[in-house]
Amino acid sequence: MRDPSLAPAGALKIDWAAAHMPVLAAVADGIAARGTLRGVGVGICLHLEAKTACLALALQRAGARVAITGSNPLSTQDDVCAALAARGPSVHAWHAPTPAEYRGFVRSVLDAHPQVLLDDGADMIALLHAERPAQVDEVRGATEETTTGLHRLRAMAADGVLGLPVVAVNDARMKYLFDNRYGTGQSAWEGVLRATNLLVAGKEVLVCGYGWCGRGVARRAQGLGARVTVSEVDPIAANEAVLEGCRVVPAIQAVETADFVITCTGNRRVLGREHFLRCRDGAVLANAGHFNVEVDAAELAALAVERTVVRPAVEEFRLPDGRRLYLVAEGRLVNLAAGDGHPVEIMDISFAIQALALEHAAVHGPNLPRQVLPVPTEIDAAVARLRLQAAGAALDALSAEQAAYLRSWQ
Image 1 (spheres, one colour):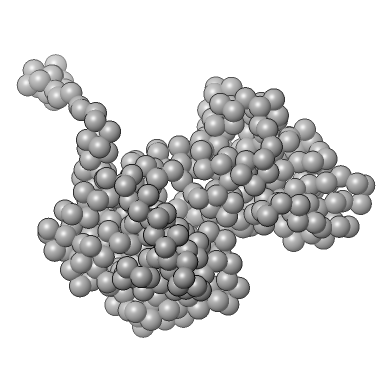
Image 2 (cartoon, one colour; image 1 turned 135 degrees about the horizontal axis):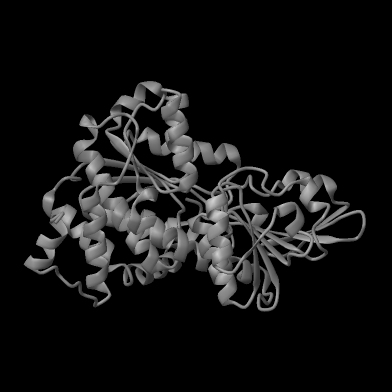
């Protein structure tokens, strides 16, 4: 934490978010009543802004001892860190740390010897296994928030090195159907527009990757009046993009006419030198994937003859032929590096699942296999019902006749 005097401003942000997170509040009350997290150490590596602070405070209210750091150098908000630390959790983060400082913060969380971990991108779990193998057995279980993190963890499991059970929160239906699609869809564009102040209507947008995040980014672009092109490697996802009104062509071709290019793949070097050489003048490049590897910023810098920061989160790269390419937020996760992340109500759902999944890991972790595991269906269903209740919605119920009909084969 860098500056405690920022706490009042951060407190206002936290209180605003908390007022719009009734599902998380209800879940925290339930966990507190059950006493399942009382005295349990929770280590968190997550984008450290107001909504995450609400999760940390909810877990603390449920009885947990919370140590937290940020999962992305540019998404940490110093005022939120100061306000959160003032309310009890142990905070190890500040905005824009060096790589060494970032790793040091993760180590500081692990120094608290947490019994359950909440990770976003798997940096904390990977560092634990790489540097502190003797400490792995102290951890009952973990949860992972992102597609990218689950890729890493499944690779660890395939290599036989994953030493703890990890609940795949990202794969919960109440997470990816809403967080990845509606959350990323809205917040990625909020980040791009806040950074650039440019019009989207009438422009051409290239979305690289048509998973749940890419779907959301593409649909929001269509809603803003853009013509949307998609690049994909999966033929089924590509067919869905076509049926939803998108043009589907390889990225190397689509960049020639795209005004905005947003990567959403979770893979590295989606945009590289060969793409930059064909981009149109004035193209805006942004990344909605977890790590800053999708747009190869080093290759872009090597091509440029001049670099200028033209707005707080926008850097202009002038190429030898005079073309200008604009990289938003250093190619880091644009919705958090250039904005405030997902809408509060979306994270209310995701963090309610996180809290219940952490409780599940704390209670059942010692008896679970050391692999990536699905979120129990009852957690998904419980959060879905709480969200409907908060929204003032209600379900129908099957009649006895209907239930019998569905059970019958005749």
